[in-house]
Image 1 (cartoon, rainbow, N blue to C red):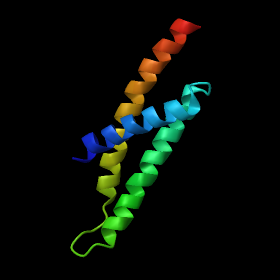
Image 2 (image 1 turned 90 degrees about the vertical axis):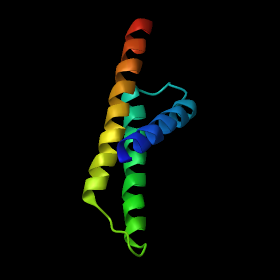
Image 3 (image 1 turned 60 degrees about the vertical axis):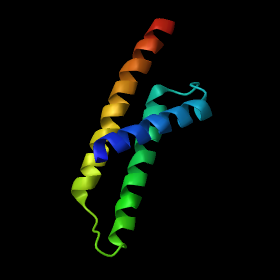
Length: 88
């Protein structure tokens, strides 16, 4: 469930940052902000899990989260990259 959930989180972060940044900034900055925010959430989630009795933190979970984030960032980068070339 990690990959699709963090993929969805990444989509929501793209929508949020896209509206905040108004696409006046570079696509690189948009991708970076989304990726860093999603990974901070993933790490904080694992830290939180380590404090819950019967649960434990897992590096594997963070890797799975990063995979979901990376897939969506890659797909968004292709989409925005194509749109940017068309407008140049």
